[in-house]
Length: 473
Image (cartoon, rainbow, N blue to C red; front, side):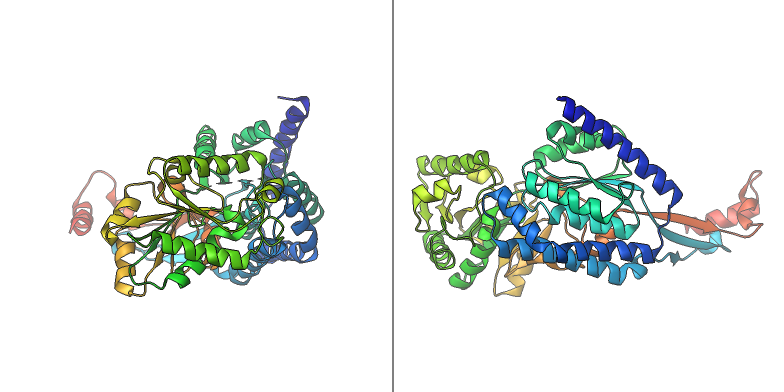
């Protein structure tokens, strides 16, 4: 660990102590102040949209501005506005019924902020995936520390600057640094830790948090399948799946990771996807609308996946491109791999790039069986004109979320909880689900000065027998 990292870790601990002290003095931040916090977030996004897009593009080597606007900035604005609009309703205490044997009394659930929360954000959507959890945390009345990815330094530094201008450090702050700082951050005694990233690192984060019994939300990933049912229009499926896969060059946690089609239709589906990709990105290497791969290491990993599949006998389809220019720009053109070996990395690891395996199935039950035999994915995409068939696929599978005849868009619906299940994550956010993630639902039962339950004390008599009989009936 370098001296700079050691100093950053000490500063981080001091900031945590400052936020904890500030929270003790304001455990219940008034709703109007929370709404002002959310308005500040939305305003920050609107005023600095160009700078945010430029920073993200600098980190990627090229990120399509349109993708940054819709996938990062507009997303956060919508989330902040939606939270502010519904905050009073979400935060309201709720009365619940009292059993006759416990009457008279009043039972209430108070929704209270958990306290100081940590947010660990990834590189693939470096602005949105830091700010959307922050929106939920501020709406809940919490204070927050954010640790963005070291793989997107320009965005991280801009985020630090913008948050520093908008909030006092004892309210919201950004901590930058490498893996050592990130590891120390995950070990802090937060009141809640929110992590977005890989399953592998997610396990380590959960273990670090467990040392202090810190509750965690893990937004991970996995291999999200797209199942195309027999008879679904091929071009329609290809256009939808291709858009979801090649948005951000496939560097999206809910991007379709592989496509399952009826046997014999693999090549025609693959060719349809590539044809549409060539229309949307006539020359991937020089097209600013097509995003680059974030790092040399990630680029080399994806290139190795293609070559492994090719060596295993898979047919590779790629959109037309200048190979030399694409490599220089760190771009991999839209690529379809037909029936790669089942044990290849394309079929066993989350791809996180513009590579799309297309595999055949003999019948729907074998397709859903394949999905069920593997870790639960973060998303499942079903393409079917038959509502009963779509329902059947859902009944036979588990996933974090579902898109029917579409993909990616379910995470843009503010009132739909977004999160994984099993290996794809635990917990959820967006809308009220996000508010509740950072909220403690505190149970309160109040009675008068005297309550009949005091008659239940020993020596047990007829009143005890009456109550027990009632409760056991």
